[in-house]
Length: 100
Image 1 (cartoon, rainbow, N blue to C red):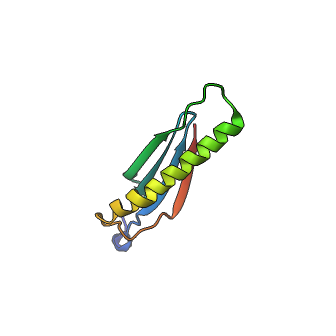
Image 2 (cartoon, rainbow, N blue to C red):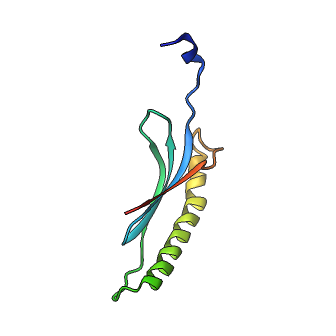
């Protein structure tokens, strides 16, 4: 280990992660640092409205509505939640989308 390595500070990064599935969509505010396990600071998951008969166009509309609802929840509840942590002044630097 180098003496200069002690002067380097580890930089925590805030990211917004979306998990899009066939029945539900989730989102989370995650703090991550290179070489460490990410920490979930706030998360929310909502079901996509059920369709008796599957229709791609209708599914896209319902998924878009669910993503909007979750994004509003993150903005209204997740961001204020961070105010009670040392990450309160951060905004997401990255957005990741996982499709399953």
